[in-house]
Length: 113
Length: 114
Image (cartoon, rainbow over all chains, first blue to last red; front, side, top):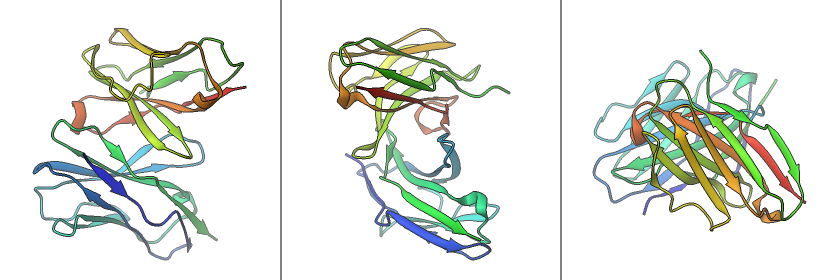
């Protein structure tokens, strides 16, 4: 069974600074995908970034990038130049083979002006 | 383009009543997912449909819960009878590429059972 662990329940960062959210996962699948989803106060979940495990290059989407350490089963999210609109819950998720998409418990990020 | 549409957004009901949550997936998506979110348990997958057929319902908590997808543009999640521990936010999500694709979530239905 897959597990996803987010060890930081809450974090805060000053506007324009950089913040890194941690995630570790465990899976027995050889081919799997990792995701970061954002849930703003409006409640709707939005995909931030996706990483395919067989790709060594870390995924990047504008100000969002990941540090994917396959051997360590670590998948952290870096947000550069933080903006007030980045305030949200962030969920790490893993999916492999025929397994369900499994979410971590989330990290509440607050960007302070 | 319209996203995933869920109704109602909020539902308050009394224990023992029947609750029906509705979802309209994005047109053209062939996979539909129902999730439940609570503080204690986080996000849990309840059931997954592919091409209107239930593929994995192992997350459905008990027989009080049932889900249907009569056609590609509509799904329901029914709880009968409802209990206070069913209080949660229920999300519907759809995907065009099955399990490995990006999930597009609705805004959720917040259910409160008194």
